[in-house]
Image: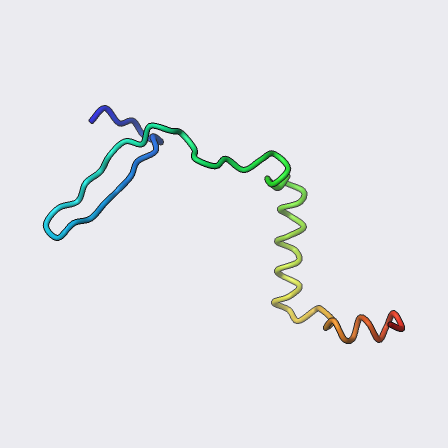
Length: 69
């Protein structure tokens, strides 16, 4: 097949066979640089998820009350 580790592939399953084909394009829709998290941003997101799991948050209505809205 001429495939190397990390090459993009396409897999299709039929009734009695599996077809593996090399994809010609490397990436169809690469994420623009501004959509990729920096290590610091990723760390912040993970910390936020931990806070949510601990129950350390306020509801939208609580926040509006606190802000007098």
